[in-house]
Structure formats: C-alpha cells, structure tokens
Length: 502
Ligand code: FAD
Ligand code: NAI
Image (tube, rainbow, N blue to C red):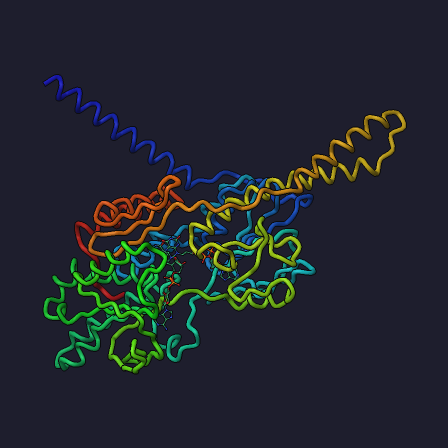
C-alpha cells in the first residue's frame, strides 16, 4: 500500500511539475515584453522572406546591433516537410505555421515585419521596392526602403517548364494554399464520383490521382494519399475505394535520385505493395482538364484520364530574383540561381547576402541548407557589427589630435587597425549534412544518415518512421507547433482524418 501511495505521489508530482513547466513556457511565449525601439545610429538590415533561411537567421540574430525589417508576402514561417500531411488532412494547416511576429516580438530590439512582396532591388543605390500583394490594401500599398545590408532569402517557385496546362489544371505542393486546394480537389473528386448515375469509366477517371515528379515531394505526397485511402476512405467510401488509383510519374529512370540505391528499391517495393503505380522514364507533356498527356519510355504519346494532377516537378527562380541577377550581368551568370562567395555575399553587389533556394551553390535546395546558412549569417552579422563599431572608433581617433597623449593615440590606432583587419575576414560557410529523411506511406520512412566519417547509414521501415516523426517534431521552431502537431497525430490516430470538404 505504502509503495502504491509513494508511486502515486511521485506520478502526481511529475505530472503537475511538467504541466506547470509547459504552461510557464507557453505563457512566456505568449506574453513578450517591451522592446527597445529602432536606433538611428544603427545600420538597417532588411530581410526578404520568412521561410527557412530567413527564420533561422532571425532566430539567432542579435537585433541589438541593427534596425531589422522583415519583408515577406506571408506573415508566417511554413514548416514545408509536413506540407503533404496537410494536403491529406493528417495535420491541420495552422499546426505547421508559425507567425513571424511570434519570434520577432521576443527580440531585444524591435523588428519590423511587413507583409509585402519585394518587387525590385537596386543593388547600386541599395534600395528595395516592395508592394502589398494581399487582397486587402490600404491607401499606401507600395513603397521603397534603403538598406545597409540585405538578406535575400525569397526561395524559389515551382518549375513548370512552360508545359501547357500545368498552371491551369494542376495543383502544386509548395505553399499552404496549395495543400489546402489539393485537399479540396481530392475530396471533390470523391464526391463527384459518388454522384448517382456516374458511369464506371467516369468514376475511374475521377478517382485517378496523378502525381508528377518522383523527387521527395512527389513520393511523400503519394505515400500520404495512400494512407488517407487505407486508413479512412475505406470506411467512408467503401463503394469507391477500390477504384482509387495513384500514379507517380517521373521523367528519370528512378524516383528519389538523391537517396541510395537500396532505399530507392525499398521505396519502389513499398509502393508496389501499396498499389501506387510508378511510371519512370515517362514525361508529362501536357495537362488537360480531364487528362494528362504522357510521353512513354518508347517515346509514344498516351493520354490518360484523371481527376487530379499534383505537380511536384522541382524549383525555378522567382521573377524578382531573375531581374536582380540581370542587373549584374558580369557576375550573375548562373541560370540556376544567385552566385554567392564563400561568406554567402552575392557576387557583384555590395551589402547583399543570399541564402537558400534562390542561390546556386554546390548544395541541394533543402531546408537543412537554408537553415544552416541563416544561422551562419547571424554570426556574420555579429562580426560585421563589431567591425563597424571598431571602424567608427578608428575613424574618430584618426581625425583627432592629442598633443598630450599622441603616443597613446597612435598605439590605440594601431590596435584598432589590426582588430579591424581581423574582423574583416569571415570564416567561410561550411554545410554539415545531417542526413536525408522521407516518409513513404504505410507507416514507413527512409533515411540516409551520415555515419561517423565512414559513409552513410541507410535505414528504412517502421522504426525509421518513428525516428522521422521525432526528428521533425524536434525541428519545429516552437513549443506551440510541437504541441499542435503532436495533438493532430493523436487526434488522427483516434478519430481518423476528416473527409468534409471545406
Ligand atoms: P522558403 O522557405 O521557400 O522561403 C521563401 C520566403 O520568401 C517565403 O516566406 C516567401 O513567402 C518569401 N517570398 C517569396 N517571394 C518574395 C518576395 N518577392 N519578396 C519577399 N519575400 C518573398 N527540405 C528539407 O531539407 N527536408 C524536407 O523534408 C523538405 N521537405 C519539403 C517538402 C515540401 C512539400 C517542399 C515544397 C519542400 C521541402 N523541402 C525540404 C525543401 C525546403 O522547403 C526548401 O529548401 C526551403 O524552404 C528553402 O528555404 P528558403 O528560405 O530558401 O525558401
Ligand atoms: P525535385 O527537383 O527533387 O524532383 C522533381 C522531379 O520531377 C525530378 O525528379 C524530375 O525529373 C521530375 N520531373 C520534372 N519534370 C517532369 C515531367 N515533365 N514529367 C515527369 N517528371 C518530371 O523536386 P521536389 O521533390 O519538389 O524537391 C525540391 C527540393 O526540396 C529538393 O532539393 C529536395 O531534396 C527537397 N525536398 C526534400 C525533402 C526531404 O528531404 N524529405 C522533401 C521534399 C523536398
């Protein structure tokens, strides 16, 4: 009895303490204190974007040193790795986004967040133009700002290769809206297929889901669609579920070219068991309202009826990035993106740093790279602030004459000069690869993890899936998002996914 009582007390104490701690952290997050206002003596740092690169920079940046402005058409950070889960209703949209102000309001000095798209950057006069592109606009909806430093982190947009019908007829999987639109379209296809009197041929068409692009986005989305089908649709649409067909179309000879052969084979066999058709060496040539036109491996053309096409065929540069690069034609010649030096400075431009998917580097365009680049830049800016302060002191001292302490002044000038020279050099950016992870459906994930210095550890299966979940949970930027995502996972396990079409 006494043992039971003691165990009960310990458990109660642990639960109450953990609950109290959780509440305390959440409350602290919700109630930011006052901030120092902008300081006219400080330099202006403008950050374009609120994605992986920009958010990681803002998280580590010492805002006391700068007057910081964040300009982005979305006023939140989007945790892209979990976007396919939103498209199938495993997670709700709000669970994977974090308003940028939730982070910036906790900074020591005020950070101004502006919901707008940068429309032009003048790298010579250091001016950025921006415009409110949202639905509601005030009397002023476009203006310009002068910067001392600009962090260019606008990401990329979906590559369409100008293939006819992609923009008009396909869903994308890049932004939050895309995932929500795809979910609505998918459920609409189901309901239309359930409409009385529909022919078998039409039901088959409506329930044929084509995913274009066998990169990680296309693979993860196909896996999530399959889970939705097996876990939920089987119960609510029993008469239709066997007609649902998922096809993944990839132009290259295999899916997931960035993963090891072993994991590609594992994914292909998991998809085969899950009845997801993979069509490799097959290129989409056109997307029509009710069909997709394919060029088959033997170069013949086939038109396949379908209800929904999701286009996940990779990235291309944004228009604003192309225009900026065109202003520096001698230095910016790489069509893949902005060329930067080893400290992520845009070549040919003074005061511009570029990070993430808008750049052309030797790294893959991933969240991991963008986040590390953002954190690196925060360190660079700390060093620049130190250098600028030393330079200012040096200039002041050089302009002075001190007949009494001339020798002392000279020594101080020399010391400052050597300190400035030291802070002028920044350590180059070095990427540390933490591994690649992808969810492939059926409660299975694949992982290529660096294993000491001896190579890669390739792992797959249910345990890897649990690792995938815990890794992404820990990578979410806030306690709030972790709680929301964990809650959604539990909710879906107990009640299943919602099939109402909002
Ligand atoms: P983004 O995160 O795209 O941010 C760009 C920001 O710029 C956005 O806030 C945008 O609103 C803003 N912006 C756009 N235009 C303008 C403008 N004109 N002016 C100002 N701001 C602008 N990578 C991984 O490493 N692991 C994964 O598991 C993974 N999963 C993914 C899943 C999906 C579905 C997708 C689409 C991508 C995934 N990625 C993953 C890739 C990863 O999301 C990108 O590499 C990463 O987002 C790049 O970060 P970024 O800061 O360069 O761009
Ligand atoms: P991707 O560029 O990796 O893959 C796109 C695929 O579409 C390519 O394999 C290409 O051959 C194919 N394709 C292009 N045009 C086609 C056509 N007309 N017909 C058929 N196939 C066509 O793009 P994705 O998957 O969006 O990924 C973008 C970046 O984000 C990558 O760097 C990726 O590594 C990263 N990412 C990482 C994830 C992870 O680590 N789990 C998840 C999602 C994205």
